[in-house]
Image (cartoon, rainbow, N blue to C red):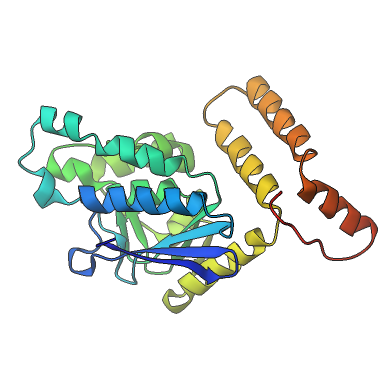
Length: 257
């Protein structure tokens, strides 16, 4: 991996994926997007990994797409390259994915952050979809996921003006889970990841899948989907262990089976 630093066991059960194009503020070129996809697919298959944190550095999570790479492309070039399909593969990562964001999360960087299940932000984090300033618009979910996260009115304002929002406003609007001082954002993400990694990996995957279903279906179908996943947990050893531990007043030892 040329543009990623990967630590499969940064903490017990927790992998860390760090974007590493610091001179370009982690701008998302085609290779970096493919590397993120490949890394997450490998970690998805690693049974020792229960939660993944994806981060950048204090200056930038990812400051957007690599404009130099895209500027001269035609519509056909973009269609054939189809990097958005790669981002959709990232979105289908099955395990809990936490974004640890500091500095800029703009354009494609904001869209990448929104593919995460939870976001921890430093006080310096800024979120935005400034593509309109370049004569274009978001194309990797920026209009769709942002509207679901912050509401139509705010999403419309952000996309049509290109203005950024602070970490504090992102938290108020429900885009971000936690905001902490800049020196603590990664450690806070590890704390959150540890609490999730202590749970049943089977139940965590099924719960994530069920919550994501909210945005893809109507209520009745979503409730049916949730119920089936709930029943499925009773086929796992983790469910038997979790309930036995509760009855026996001890801490459960989940194995992901």
